[in-house]
Amino acid sequence: MKVLVFGATGMVGQGVLRECLLAPDVELVQTVGRTSTELRDAKLREIVAADLLDLPSYEGELSGFDACFFCLGVSSAGMKEDAYTHLTYDLTVAIAGKLARLNSKMTFIYVSGTGTDSSERGRSMWARVKGRTENALLRLPFKAAYMFRPGLIVPLHGIRSKTKAYWILYTLMRPVLPLFRRAFPNQVVTTEELGRAMLIAAENGAPKAVLETHDLRALLNRQTN
Image (cartoon, rainbow, N blue to C red):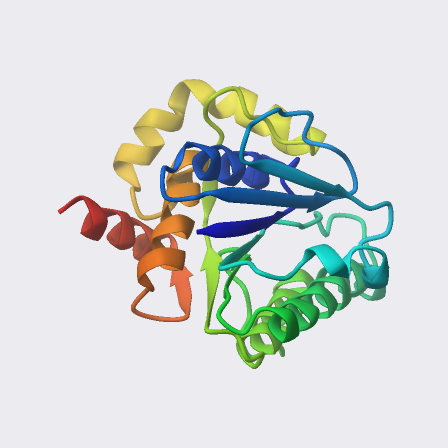
């Protein structure tokens, strides 16, 4: 399987990239982002583009892939809706539209978040924008498209969030995270589990298009049984 990973330097993207590089049935991983992952691996290629919306500058390297794991995202904290929409909806849909035209057999997986508003009419700005983005992605002519809505994501294997507030939160919560995970297993997922769930969905499909944390856990459990 040949895989594209957008946003491989973020917390989620780092976890997904790690699992892709470890997976024996993944022969090629190509990352696309504004900065290099600074990793070296025989099956890793990178595209570094200062402006990801400048698709003509790198679209020649986006064909021939079986799956795309789209992990790009920004925090909505302190952002106006138009700016957040540009970085969330406009960027994602533009790239996905190009990928759908170049890769007719591609499975596209988008990392959204729990609480996303599919109606696009709720009071929460970020949830409306994410919902609009999900709806647009599901209309594109991919072989399959899945919207992943994880809740609390626990970073493993030395991975850390690039967002300072999140990094501080995870540091403070680290001692109690194992207890929280045991108490609320359907609200917590690790970066390792998220990456593995993406690979499972890309290879074998998933029972529905929008997957919350408990759906991701069911996907993982189905693979191990």
